[in-house]
Length: 75
Image (cartoon, rainbow, N blue to C red; front, side):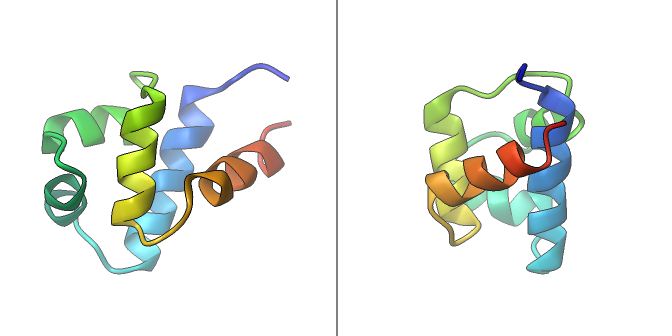
């Protein structure tokens, strides 16, 4: 199955909002610019593994769990 930026971004946005976190908070916790996080969430860019790692930690989850959710939602 091919990787899809849109699915990854949508899932990150859903997890972030479910936890009641703003982009500013997640970007601060993950040490990435808010604009970069916004581009990831919109599917405009493909994040590197280390960026996904930092985002998953900011969301209070393991990277493997984030990737599992992405994989499960990829057709």
